[in-house]
Length: 362
Length: 106
Image 1 (cartoon, chains in turn red, purple):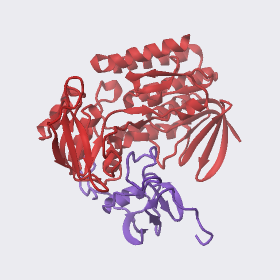
Image 2 (cartoon, each protein chain N blue to C red):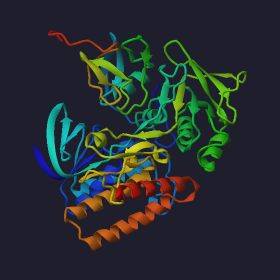
Image 3 (cartoon, rainbow over the protein chains, first blue to last red):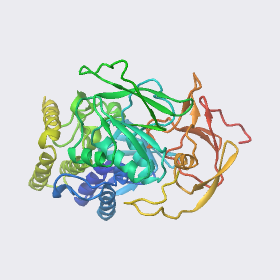
């Protein structure tokens, strides 16, 4: 068993940012990731990020990822790839399978930055090959450069649905339609306008009734919804598609936090059940921290800020930063996070986050 | 289908081409790309048939979380093909049910 100061599970934006801050302060950090490459889901984000300059607006996710990898390399944090963390024991021990071998690590502090998984939607035919998550499509087209199909139906008009539709056009596919169950488009108008200008219809108050196909998707049946989200018989419409893409949100990947005994709360605005944490990102189990999508589904920019916050708080609690240094660093991060959670899109998340942090004080 | 040209990412990077065997047929693949990507590029979309009802399944999440894309690779069942890199000469089989145990010869 190897003994270390800080073990971080997940080398995405949150985990890498935490590693950078903690290692810069002198903490011995090991980051684990089950993939062959660090960077999490940033490498498939080939669009320019939005928000303010402080949050790298205008920079593509792929470039943010490369910058993080460079910084982590300089910071001295160790990144172990092909390393699946499958268990937490006694709240300080991690069981890891790396390159097929089992190894154990005991860490003074553990940060879970495991990210999220895509939500599914059940409808007749939903298990056919060709029904895929929006993130899966992004991975295939932008990272692996393979088109899963030629004619796509997008389910969900949030920012992910709108942006992935545009990326499908860039990759050479045809997007037949974007459907949205609610009467209004979910994502930013700027993205909706862009995709509409490209000739892709966004059908509101509409959902998928059924996917048809023998082994893989051949057709999709759409149906109109009334204001109570009930299907209106007789309004069915068929589309010839070979891919149905689900962009209906994400859920926190929280198995390790459950295993460690963290207390959870159900916060719909942040994606469902997630570990209660305080404003240092520490859960109800002393020494176990969370950051990024596991602590509430938000943007990669928020994950970066939360990761930094956790890294600084951990460095402080291990005695690598004094209280004044830590306070100043945390203050500037909190200011930036508040900006990220401003406006009509961020407000509900901000309120939910504040409520979650208040719960941790009880 | 491979995306040869891309307005943001540029032309497809040249990679080492290797041969893999899928259900007895040989196909070309890029070394170290995920098995699932190689199969999709070759137009294969059904990866396994489920245990109870024998229903077809393909790739859903492509990042190793959902386990829908599991296949039998070099005799080992339940391999997540979306995060397992291609190696030259790999033998891949569409998985039936939960897969089979490896025999001594394999």
